[in-house]
Image 1 (cartoon, rainbow, N blue to C red):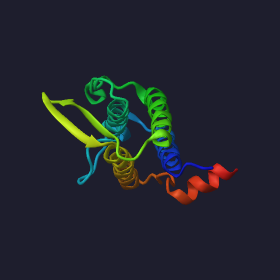
Image 2 (image 1 turned 120 degrees about the vertical axis):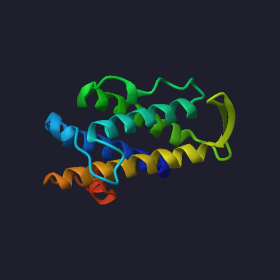
Image 3 (image 1 turned 135 degrees about the vertical axis):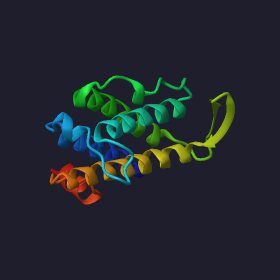
Image 4 (image 1 turned 90 degrees about the horizontal axis):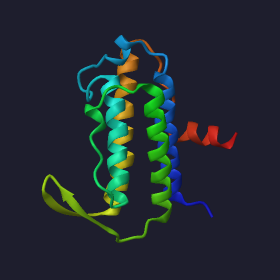
Length: 160
């Protein structure tokens, strides 16, 4: 039987990789462009998506919080693609094994926290979707057609 939560994370992984592939041929000037109302440049936003997924996976696995990717040097689309492929697969695995009611406990900023696991899973999907949309807006403002990343296109591509 298909795991519905896992399928949502399969879409998330596919959409992240689709956006990265669309950015593969961008020039440095295009990667460094931003428009008002977005998080920052395309380059910064891609790094932010990858860094956030690393932090979600670590928290969901009760592992130490990784160093912020956002402050690390640019590793290129290929490096981000490898990272997002890895964290995307981890999120699928976590989502498919998740049990209702699990509480995550840890320390962030020297403060203890308790959060339901579903909150981080929800945030992982919403966060990536929001920032992919922002990148699509920046691409559109440059006259570049962004990739189709909705559920309909995922369904069509996953069938074939």
